[in-house]
Length: 282
Image 1: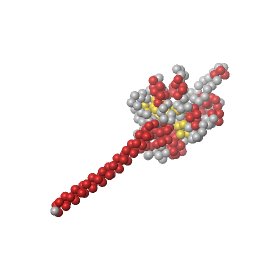
Image 2: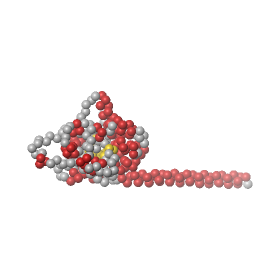
Image 3: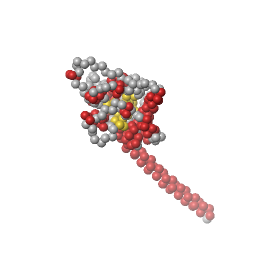
Image 4: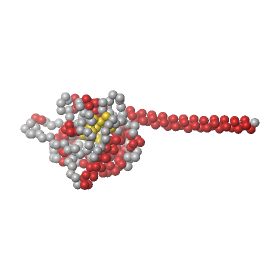
């Protein structure tokens, strides 16, 4: 009888352990499923396809690249090295209209310029990447990633003259990158595809776009990555064109971003992919 009791007790204990493990397993499965569902929801803005002809760069990777470059620039400035600004017109005097044109958000009346010999400013590279915001002008003026250059997607409808000068200087000049972005890849993916078809080999798409960046990163971090947070569209005539270093990442921006760097890999690893290349070389 005692032997039977021991066997029965052992069977009961085993059953309890199985039920307990089952409960724990169910709980773990639910947590994993919930996490996967959250990732899938966030990845709706990252439309990676097998037949894509362009490369991708994760938002987290771009942030790391940007602050690495910024820190190198700070070192150069501290050592007294003189480097021209990335866009030379930021240190030159231009009319408001000319500044808009150089940023890709305006037009020049060529009828009044026929008598003038126009010499385009020499493009001086300060960073190893060219970041192109391919959204509409108003969206760009309202908010954009620091160091971004406006390049409206509509320019690709031209058979000639569809490039801005910076694009020509960065085209296929590895290890330099040309990174395109919008809010959710809907426009940028088409731009990237078209540019690759037109001979660009160093085109990268910023995976997920601004929308994903705002979803997966803290607001305080994005405030250091993105310039402009107005909820309403500012009239073009009243927009202050930023042609100073404020369009770059400041020391304060870098310090703020680095406070979150430990969380960036964990939050950003599932976003996008990168096919090649070292993103920064001294």
